[in-house]
Image 1 (cartoon, chains in turn orange, purple):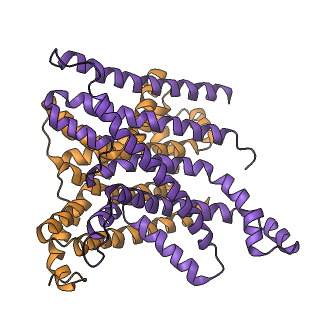
Image 2 (cartoon, rainbow over the protein chains, first blue to last red):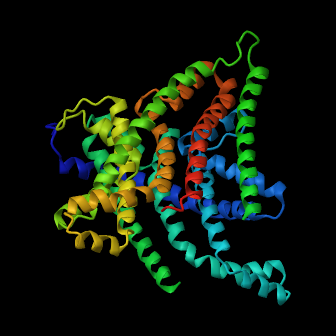
Image 3 (cartoon, rainbow over the protein chains, first blue to last red):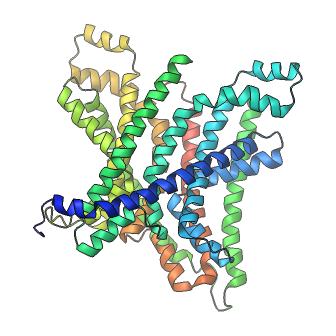
Length: 221
Length: 253
């Protein structure tokens, strides 16, 4: 078997394990993205706040998270939190890091989307004496959110690919599974290539889908 | 507008102050938790040794990425369908998988049969960074070329310019100006991605932080990683400011 060339038998043999890894990758992406959607909204609202004591620190934190690597943030959370007695499972730490990192990206999407709403809408809501909650949930967000879908979709796909970095803190996702198989069998060609193929067959159609969404919103506006 | 500028500038200063506070905290923590015989700033020499690798990777990686991006961007607007197809295939494959996959592929797969290519971790890092960011850059270059107005191309044809001359004298000089701001953002992405080479045993600044963690023990962990985050921030932030500065005065584009 060890002739160096590509072996389909080996691929079939390792496929179940890779798919198990893929499942962990997908779980991390879905939970991480849900978290980043919520954190992003909080960050966007904090940044837009009229109160400078809230908006400036929020801005600084967002900039700081955006300017530093996800990998280092993973190490930071994974090694520093236990130092202060907070022991969390690696998967959980990974999801929190993904949520924070992409939360800052999403917050920019929300901010741009909210800023794109015409001033007249705010003024009309005020003229009709709508309470702030009503203005947000009935007037602003229903108009602001749909045009955000393409940008959010792009980050979702990016997070799916970048979640491979969770292997650095021992989360056995797709990429770490591939590397473990490689170390066990001394064959890296098939596991790492197939991991790449699995990432590609999910991310490429997804990004095409996002492009179609984008085209649809571009036509409407 | 003026008010906005002031706000943005103040936020900038605030972000820098927070970064400095973090570094300060790192050293503050160091002063209070270290055994008394530890000299101050003892982490810095090791970290700075790693920093030179990080910076070298950023420089060589971005040069490679720039060359690939311009080259592929031009090929993607080629009149030949096969050339266009090959260029898009490269872009889609490298954007469809993450840089970590590409790095591992170059580092783990190429040295073994059937390839048998001996590749140093540094070269693997530069290749992965250049190929990955180059694919994203190619899209930027293609967009910039397509944004050149039709009239420019018609004028070149009317002047009987050859395709090469038109590309060299009319299209590229205008397109390359427009790619500056998006390339600044890609440069930051590239800088952040250099940290991944720590996973293929290349002793960059992240790798050095991990060695310090192992050699100095649990007590020093917070300051090590705070210092590491602060180092990345202090390199990336000036790049962002530069990009914003260029964007604020690009009336010529």
